[in-house]
Length: 316
Image (cartoon, rainbow, N blue to C red):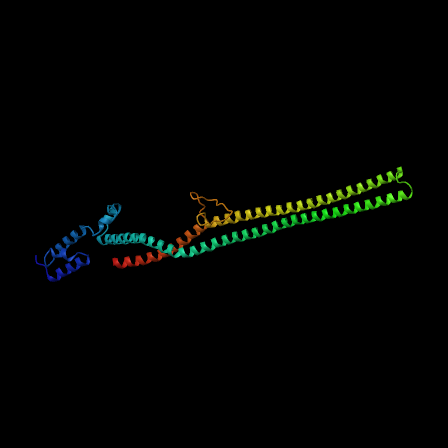
């Protein structure tokens, strides 16, 4: 049965509107009747969609999907392709964002690290300098005490010698007067003279011993005072050494807690808590990682938004 041109054109237009390619329509000749149109539509609907094999088996074999009209299947396939392309691009964007974030953050955190290390080093240098100055000052005090002790002992020795010399002169003078007086009284060889000489000698000996004991006591007092002064000064050095040690430990631990063992500069007098195999991570590392993560998220969101717009443009 012949088909009119009007009917054929209408059928071809309907097929094209349904998405049937011209190559399939051309297989039926120049004009199409209604039966041929129906056959072409049925054949076209039974043909698999281009790229449908990319769908997961769970979706492609789902009865609900199979029951969908062809145009709805095309929408499902279109959405899946966009999502798949977007996921692949997200992985690329993630890597790129992480690299960019690290490159942006590295100079910033490098400067923070250098400043923190410099502060710790300067605090140790300052306390070492203050400690050395204080110790040298204390040592000079000890030297002065020893020097004063030696000078005072020499002075006491001279005083003792002078006092003993005076006692000796007085004794000789008194002895001479005693002899002259006894001779004038005719007692040159008398018992009274001998008793008087004995008493004079005993008094002289007593004065000599008293002077020596007094000098010895003064010497001991000087030595005791000097010993106490030196002991107190040494105690001050010990206290200062302990305080400096406590400062270094507290400052070193605080620095290691923030910077981490690997970023800690060499600090004289401080032994790190961490080791090469078991280091202290440090707050610095955690802060740096958080900063890089925030930068990465921002960059990744920007890249993903741009990639999604581009994917949509390419799919349309």
